Image (tube, rainbow over all chains, first blue to last red; front, side, top):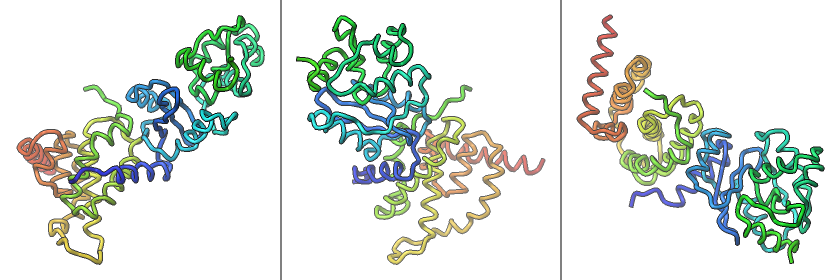
Length: 187
Length: 153
């Protein structure tokens, strides 16, 4: 048998990451709400995608960060571990570096405020806009949530409508509800 | 002709890893092919962001693999069971050839470089170029004729 063995394949992928030769590494992570496509650069995690089309994600990563995009488990392992703890109810805060340097100023500011919304809590789009010093930008905040590159870790599921409705979620309302239920924010 | 961007490395690796591994096994034997395989794709990865277009990637990665196979052959080792290739002795002269070959059309250049620089046979070159042995032979001899004409100009 002369095929590339899984061990040889893994050895190459590990070495590529260890030698810092990648613009972005990615892997698939199992979770109770579906398989997650997770990617990181040298600076930090840059993508979590529900129901990913891998080919499309590869092209997106290559356009944003560079052509050297490779599936490699070790760089993704910290996120895998913390997501696993989170879904088992054992972790309430993520402690992961995040790379959102390519986003527009406003998006970054809103996402930084979003990161401060604690586990088990919710906030309205308008409140989050006010915290980002743009009190009338509730709708724009909705757009930022919809394009959140790192759902779950940057907890856009904790942002709801002024009337208490869940409103929307990039991964579908079922997932938003499941996450809020896990955190005890929904009865 | 449209200048095409190289694909994300994952796709490039996925497309070529099996044939490159098979090629390295033919050249080096199973044991040494594994290290050479990893080194080939690490070297490709190091150079990947400098590529200006996505054409002839297959010939390009065969060139890297061939070079690594040659270096492996030259390396002394305890359990020497594979004979040294006599044809490798001519390799230094190739430094000049490679430079000259820069001016050839891409397919002819790849054929000349792989044949005379790296000693691949025409069937292997045909595979690398996505054609066949006959087309590879024609491309190599067309390239050599063109180089001779340039030399006499």
